[in-house]
Length: 133
Image 1 (cartoon, rainbow, N blue to C red):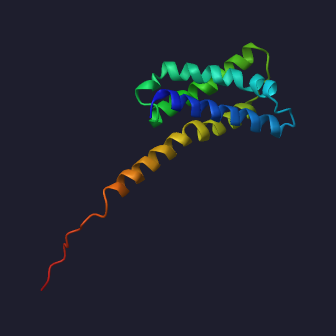
Image 2: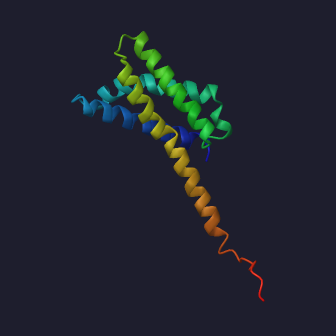
Image 3: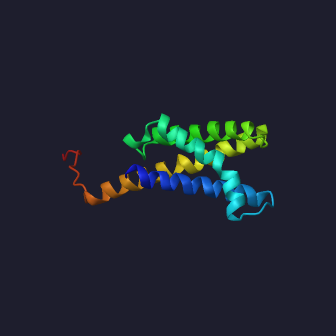
């Protein structure tokens, strides 16, 4: 997978995070509301992508961790700098949810790739190791 599709999936994950977060607090999920919630995390995602140089291996778990850390640390920092609320419970929930999304899709993608590679090899022929008497 190339970097642009990986970035697109990361952006979709962050938008899902923002939509679910706004919905759970009975806030509007219109375009402006979601954009207002998502922008610090999207900027943090870009930061993690650049610092982690994830274009070298966009679907590696290491890239997922870099993107996740950039998203959480950058997003929370920008929220603090702009006067938005940052409570410990929010940091914990956002960190866990974003890890599940940003690292999780990569793990699932790699699992599917591995399964496809194994199935394309066909059934393996095993030699019997039991001896006959």
